[in-house]
Image (cartoon, rainbow, N blue to C red; front, side, top):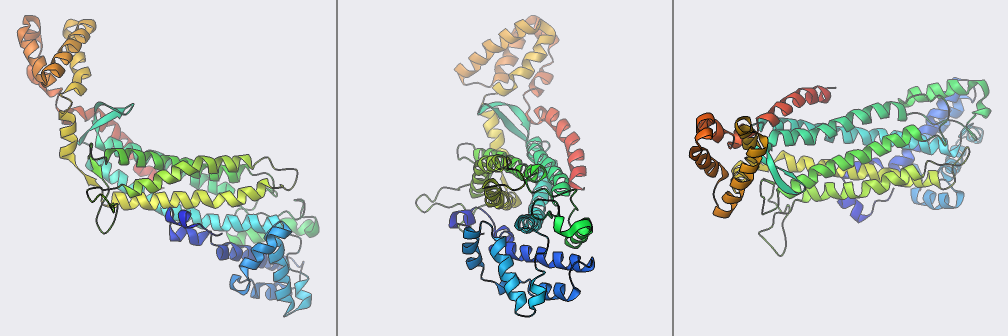
Length: 455
């Protein structure tokens, strides 16, 4: 697979190597080697033929660019590859060359090769996912009592716990991790069906050959060929798109909280990271940018996979080929996003003082609901609501803190003055105390999420 300069910018060298042209061709040759060895073990082809085939199943022996060009004419990359494999084996044994690719078909080769490279891609994704989830849960534990503004509809709402925010970022990642593991158990399976999925050439020994091949490759043995039954495979791909969306959610929040006017969080800087050539004061959230790019592309990639599912009869025309072309993009984007966010969270700057200043700048209005509930127990909900609305307007007009305006109003009212504990009332405006409901939720989630992470 050739990756454009712009794709390369948004992913990692590790994931590029997984879907590299040579890696895919080597996976195809691995299929041919294992097929020959399994057929020899079942007495279908001679042992000597299997050894001859296996000896030349090495991608560097072949001109991959020429194979790609030939594949365009042939309709599948596997066709010219098999021809070249046959030609190469014939250099050593013409008889052995007649047994290359025996009983298989081009889609068997390509699908199994994609399964093999996808398994490696999933391993890379899981490693980054594990690292990011650990970091988020550790940050959550450390910041259970750190007050931060919760924002709804892009506006300040109430005070929550930064620890809960980190916990809420981690939870979807761990759910996707569990889903990917479960889906991989079903989707990472051998493809072997022969021309129309019946293994007709292999006869009664077909299932035994498939079982041997699956064992050698470390894959699940399929119940039958899945040439045009793509449901398990596509579920795996679409879960990658869901993961991309969850990473985009984290990147969205992080980039918003890193805006200069908010400045509650910041990605690490220095050594050229996130700088601007024209504006030296800028601290661009480049990790968030990469994750947002992956999240922006994932819906179209997932849609292409779903659109390719309506494959014709026993072999798809155009749709299977579209699926093969789209498949790597999801993994390239997700791995790039995960690596970028791991870089950001490894040295995330958390400005707790700024979080408090942003809360204080709202003059205590974010605590109005708690104060209204406290007053409702004394004067009833309608009157309490009306009073808080009136006092809120006064606080805004006077540029005062709501707690001071409220305390003055309570002291001026004989009934309220007798029944309202001023210390309790002031406590309702304490940002740390306001985090307690969020802390309880986060603590409950943390135990469950750490258990998920340990699986």
